[in-house]
Image (cartoon, rainbow, N blue to C red; front, side, top):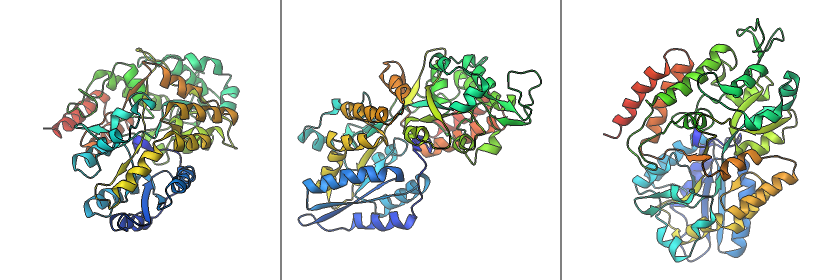
Length: 449
């Protein structure tokens, strides 16, 4: 959600005018009774062809309803949508994220579908455990789960082989904030300076690194979804007093400070790129350039990474921390704009997208792992048939203690800005984590007073 929930695979930027134009149709489209065109917007351009299959199947079943679909890059998407729900020009249906869902629900800008779900007998038990509960606030339901994701470590097989690191050890690697465990040992062994010396070799020059062992995702705001989240939680960190809709955060927890300091330590040791040199590009660019051996990313990147024609990439699970292996699990839903003139048609579409009929179509494309269990199994089979091993993501999701939900609260955008600044200052070496996070936590909790 970031940008952290949720970033998805690299997407093509569609102009703001496209979203504004299609959205305007949503607020002032034809009245129900005759042919209806629903406007539907998402932020993942790579998923449009997959959902177009669903739209075609939907229209075949409902000849009077056409779905006009478009996509907009993540940051612009939310800027536009926030303006449109206020001005009354939002699309009939829009892709929703847990980072923005609370504010739309609080402001009554989405349609409560609780009675519709009950009336039509939608089986909430068919979805991945916990995902259906995310979209409820004050007893009102605003969405149905579309997909799920966990986080793993993608690595360059050629660089790993060249360094003599055994990939068999990756399935059981460990981490702790003191010495980094076997995970840091692997990172060090995969780091190489311009003289060919590894991070584990005497004389290693951290100021002249040719290949970094890992390129962390530094810009993850208040969630740390693809960076510190799994590590901090495996170290005993808890985000807030209750989830969803807690009002007291614990970003001042020493367990989080230890984790963030460890990530900063990778930079100091030369095992990870300096924050000010990588932050604008992101870890993906460093990996693709061959200058990093590993990155942490979500399962939504599996298809693009594992099908990479230039690099030979594979995925391993996150390392197990002091309290075991922990991965954030996340998903998205579709929301119906409260001001739509086509509530009945919009509900039919939202219900269809969240059904096995649509999610089976999505499964075949392997763009995401569908929220419905049976559809998810079909996606895994399709991945396997294509030669992709995504088992680490599945194992994390199936472990009863292996996943946790990212925090869902009000003020998400403000919290993200506060925490991004606080953690960035640590990575830049301007402050230690304890000092920076304690101050930030006080500011965050002040938002709820």
